[in-house]
Length: 103
Image 1 (cartoon, rainbow, N blue to C red):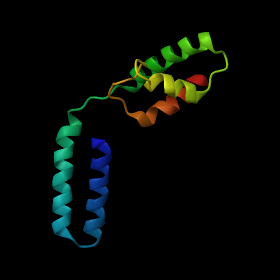
Image 2 (image 1 turned 180 degrees about the vertical axis):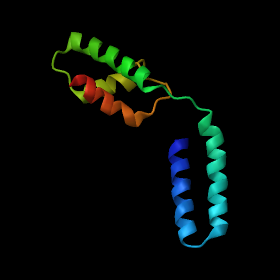
Image 3 (image 1 turned 120 degrees about the vertical axis):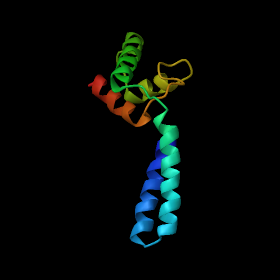
Image 4 (image 1 turned 90 degrees about the vertical axis):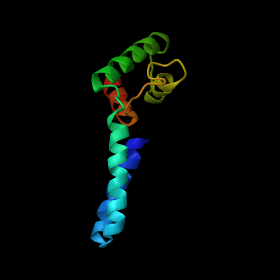
């Protein structure tokens, strides 16, 4: 969520600069700086760690259901008790990894 807000503040800053609103550029840049401090301290799982978690979930589910769909894997991964439940992970990369591993 912090990264989304940070990106939005950067985009707004660029738009304000194009419109000649330096007062608003400074305000948005201040927000970007603060968000950088918070978001920079949040560690997310690496792609390799996510891939390992997804693979283990797929292996577990394939033992039960041979015809496995990406949606079922996504539900299992993020469900309470799932391999990525409550972990700091860049959620946008997970569907790509799931599709890659399901082949």
